[in-house]
Each structure stands twice: as C-alpha cells, then as structure tokens.
Length: 372
Ligand code: FEO
Image (cartoon, rainbow, N blue to C red; front, side):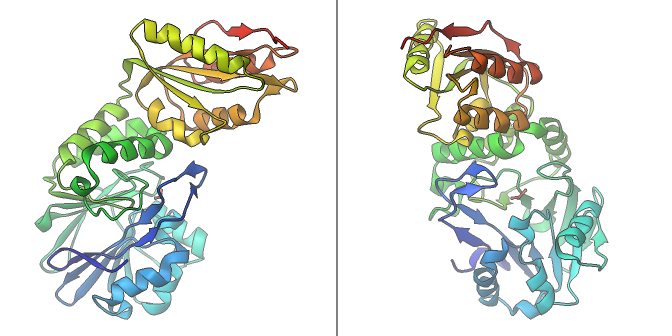
C-alpha cells in the first residue's frame, strides 16, 4: 500500500494485512487493515496511531512518501493495543523527541508493553491541541475498546479519528464506505461489533452522546474503510446495538452434531420457528468458526445452542463457542439449549448453565435420546 491522500495535508499511511485469518480469537476471512493517519500542519507533522509491529516497514515507507519519519513531531496514540502501537519502539528510535498525546491508561500501557519511561501529554475529555492551522479535540472512550481508548476529532476538517469504534475487519481495494457498498459495509461492521464491542454497550452509548456535539464529515477508523456516505446510518446502527435492541423475529441456531441427531433436531426446531414466521439463521460449528456467529447474535432475540454429549460433556466446538460468547456478554436474550442425549446428556445442561449465567430467559431443554 502507498500513502493515500484523504484531504490536502491529510494522508492514510497504515498497513494492509490481507492474509490474517485469526485476530485474537476472532476469524478474519477477509483480512484486516491497521489504519494510521498523517497530518501535515506547516512544519508540524502529526501522526494518529501506528500499526502492528510486523508492518512497521510498510508503514514507514508510506510515511516517507510524504515526509521523513524523523520529521514527525507529535504522535496522537488513541489506543495502545498492539495492532495500533506495535511500531511505537521503532518510532521512538527515529524520533526520540516525539511528543505523545494519549490518556493516562495509554501511558501506563506504553510503559507496560514497551518499557517506555517517558511522559506523555495526558488528555482529558474536551481538551484540545492546536498545531497552527488545525485543532485536535480529544474524547476518552474507556472500554471502546480498552480502558485506555480515546477518539480524536480534527475540528477544521470535521474528521473523526475513531480508532476501534466504527471499524470493520476487511482488507479490500475499497477505501471508503460507498466503494465497499452499504450491504457489505454493515455486514462487516456488525460482525466487528459483535466480536469486539458487544460487551461495552453502556460505554458506546455514553460516547455517542458526547460525540453528538461534533459535526462529522468523515470517520477514519483504525480498521477497514473510511466512512463518508453512511455516517448517519452507522451511528444509528451503533445506537441500536449499544442499547441492545433485538429483533423479536430473529432466531440464531448454533450447533454441532456427533452422529446426526442434533443436526436433525436443528432442522426440526428451525422448521417450527419458520412456521411461526421467524427468520432463522443457522450456523454449523463444524463448518464455521465460532466467532462467525457473533454478528448475528448482536440483534437476535432468541439463541438456540445445540450440542451432542461427547464423553460426558460438550463437543469441543460448542464449548469453544460458549466460552467465547460468555466473554462477549450478550444480554437479555431468550435461550434454547437442545441436543442429543448420548449416554448421559450433560451437554444440554452445560449449555443451560451458560445461558443462565448470562441472565437469559432459558426455555426448557429439548433432548433427543441416542438412536444408535
Ligand atoms: Fe484494534 Fe483494540 O485494537
């Protein structure tokens, strides 16, 4: 990838990772990007975020198309997860006097990850940095996606550098939302929300309320395409997802089957829901990664999990899915555990326990005896 001009003096200089297929447990069949942005304000050169360490060379090459890496003055580090801070040690080698703007949590993280002992400019909500022609306003966004996260708004250009918020894991030729297409954009965005942001609805709601004061013409996230056409639609979708609004007609069925009985139950239960006019989304964990289900779970009212009993417990695919989903904490759902009985039927009980721990309304377990 080369540096991409977004506006006069503003460039995307991040890296593409088309080959990545697992991103900390989240399947990324379409790859990912680690976006970073360079702003030239007269003789001030400002960088917003950086990239995963393995992509530092590509990142530096992109910067060099615009200005020498050594000429960078300011780093705005919106978030220190290594996909956005991995180049930090190399940046410091080239720019030992780099001024860093971040939250107190990010400063702690930079120290923990990289042993950095310097002092950052610690920012609070509403604080601004004027670099000459440009004014950067900072908005801490704790837990969107980590405690250290923040967003940065470039006032004169009405650009929001949103870091993980509004991201999508996709590496394509499209740079902007309208180039990707509305359907594909929202399919990737809800998948990302379900796998990354889902536990933090309260924090997302607060953030959207605080950011509503900003007039935004362009959102530059840290993953995926930039948003210029569907900003209103994306903010509205985030508001719905953050409020945990679910579709009463949407049912998700997730299962794995040992000898076909649980699969047969899936077909029968699915037919019953469809006869009631429900939209049923079926996921076989034999064929799909557990994280591929999460996008559907974001707005589903009813979630059915089917598992055969294997060696007195769950099939490992279903166990992995439940462990993953438990961490992402979808709330207020109706759950239906089901599965074939095996010798002793523990699997459905274990599914039921997870649903109860999540605080869901759990429908009576449906079991089918082992048929030989
Ligand atoms: Fe894209 Fe929370 O890192």
